[in-house]
Length: 313
Image (cartoon, rainbow, N blue to C red; front, side, top):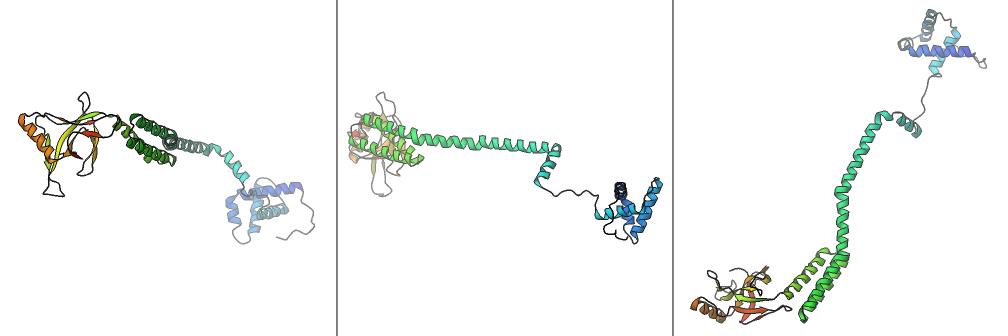
């Protein structure tokens, strides 16, 4: 098709509208475009086909208008070309399609909120409470408890040894609390509590004298098979005859337990005296062999003893 002459007058409005109609006719006739634009002499065949279409509709279209329509179609002059993607267009598209994705987004947000809430309730909150409780214990509760047990010790004894021990335990416990060492601070509090309890205890130590139970035994030490160790089986009783549990450490294995009955290491002479006394009539004439008074850690013995003890026999 010959190029339009430079400087040619602009087409009239009705020709432009008709050219647009030609373009629209070609664009909507998909099979026509596919068939007529695919081979040789395409423009001539396309012109002929367009004339037939418009003639069948009773519309007279000039060759110039048909040529303008074909050129416009090839140049995409009347085609809508969407603008490039951008955040504004994306936002508008999302808003326009909110009905499709909105319910899924809301469901996702709801699941996220529930999950975060459950995590806070089951993990974060308990951890925060535990941390706050430990801080409270280290900064307030333990120092107060340490001082209270220390005061109990001082009020319960005038002996220099226990008072010095209490001072040491208090200083170590307070230092551990300041350093955030919960285990050590608690251990010093427990030690002070035990010290105050031992000082407050008062009891008698008696040789066990009941039918079917031994009052004295001897053992062969593992370190010297030729020797014998002699023990009296004793128990701690308060004023009303009730058992009193006291901390006892075995000299055989170093184990410490709170018990009311144990074996006390004595000399062979004491062992023989008790044995003969019980064999005579089955009754011990002097069953009480020690007294532990309140305010003291020591027991006053009326028998010769090394102070060693055992927990089983």
